[in-house]
Amino acid sequence: MKVSEDIDVQMLNEFKQGRLEMLYRRLYPALLLYAVRYAGEQNNFLAEDCVQNAVFNAWKRRLQFESVESLKSFLYISIKNEIVSLHRKAKASERYLSQLEEDVFFQNSVIDQETQLLLYYAIRSLPERERQIFELSFIEGLKITDIAEQLNVSESTVKKTKAKALDILREKLPRELFLFFFVLKS
Image (tube, rainbow, N blue to C red):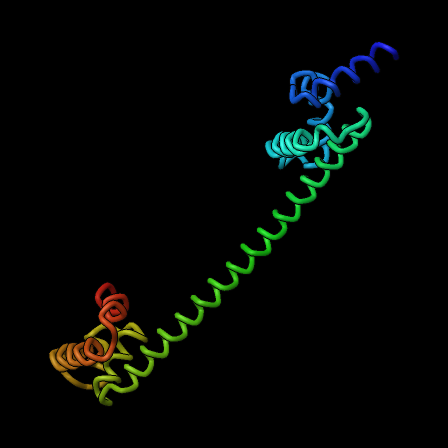
């Protein structure tokens, strides 16, 4: 035991003088193993950062350590605190991302609702005949021949009335919204 104690005292003295080589050779493997075990497998890469931060914090206070035990104790407690902090940050980040996803979903649902209302009111504002042909064509998906047959009018009348309905909607709706709904679908 005497040799080990002498090496620990020498390590502490060198550490107090600002030299880290002996501390890294003697303590680093055990500190890293401790950090890996408590950080968890998924945070393996962060364990080394926790050890580095603990050693740096100890180095800033190096003159305060009176024994190797107090230095080791400080290092292990610092590593534990770093890991707890990592877990807290991860939980906070998860909560933030979850809230952000909820906010985006809410914003998108509001935009969808607003868009649908704009479209609904624009269609409702069409004259009766244009609205009827528009709904049969775009909502029910009937072909021009089927609409003409159902309404007992010519196909030419259906085409002209449908075109007139689209012209009215083009004026009432924002350009992007009109293009989104009708250019690709007509």
